[in-house]
Length: 176
Image (cartoon, one colour):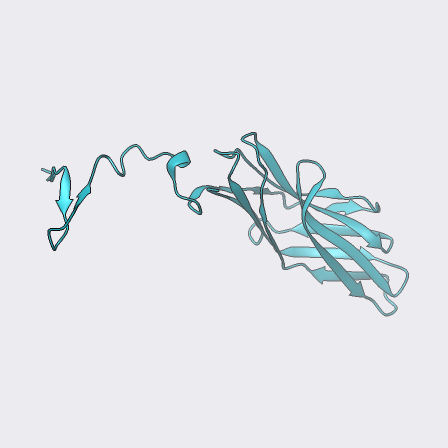
């Protein structure tokens, strides 16, 4: 049988005061959590398919996660750890691609510029251990989708493939 201690107050050691215990922990909700508390954590999905673009506009890389904040004051810590490969085909001596975290379809949250210099070859493969992180303030209680996107800046085309075992997009809601 489990034991219970029932008290209404605890007296301080020197007897000068008491601490009231009127349901201090029971009934605590996400809105009553102190600022900085972690309210929820969501891990996104990673598609281990190859994505190709020749465009100088952002395209989805196949990694996304959605979260519904419990409060409009919450912050969302967006953390992307990406493992895989990127291939930039180029006919010149340099190639560049940008990798970013976007909110919704196009709002930039964080960007990383990836550059490679190829002396005489027609393609350059880069291992992409990339780490992107940003604390976002969405100011909403509606569902938000964050995703990884990339685009070609210099070169003929860029291909990217993330490994699902080495890549993750994690959203952490923090009480504001």
